[in-house]
Length: 387
Image (tube, rainbow, N blue to C red):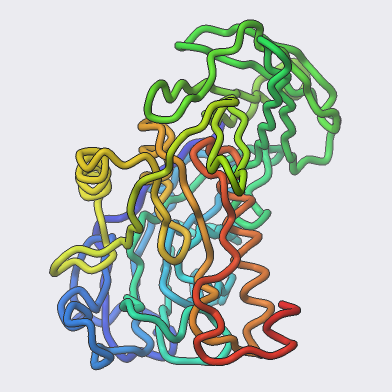
């Protein structure tokens, strides 16, 4: 089975480092993640905060890593571009500061050096570049190592969870399609289960390439703030009769439509949307929020009586999406294609949109994928419209 270890503790950090050193210099600052170097200078709303390349480094022994034939690094948020080095070799790069990405680790030695060069410099390829909020630089969400067997549910595709759940309401029941994505060289089976309140209510075993279709009888709807009921879908990979990997996700069963005359309609009834936009900022720590900060934000929004949130203007933390699923808030989720179109940034808009949707497809709270925000402030042309 997969094993996950969060590695937020005991990092070294230095500003204005543009290449990966062969070892960690003794004078680098010691810190824990999450962290942004703009926690102080990015607070005044101006454009005088430091934007450049900084380095994060950490040593990891083989004994500290989770068990598994293959191991993946997972970064939940690094703003805005980064290069990752393992024992002196560059193993990946990522462009976009708000989404999860992973990379498979090559050979693991007794002692290993991990270095991440993070860059929030102005450029013309990675969004956002023009906006009325700070582009905090840093590794500001969790970093973890995932250990899996050689055959496993996919970890390589745009940071996605490897399981996709699509419920469809049919009268009093719900038809639930569950698809998994697998990396293997053998013919495996997949056991699919739907759980309600911790109990299995539907299950089947399928060949690995087949999509499961299960039925929830007398379905309990996810009904906004009134009753945000969640089911769990679980998939277990079986090789030669042995359970070797497992993934699960919560989901909700609901219908919705947006009508120009009646407004938002949830499960066949008009459901007024009243709420706020939300950014991921805190005094002194910038965007490096902890779970308790996300929970406090959510509690304040619920105290207002809100039913909806527009998540400005980028992918937010999985912690916050999960809280919104549980609270029954209706979400507009978007990418930071904002303010001014960059002809050289087209590839980045597409990759960020793919990451947003693939990583968050299962959240019942999300009803809108936002394509852009005020994108014509800097003018409009055919290239912008086509994009």
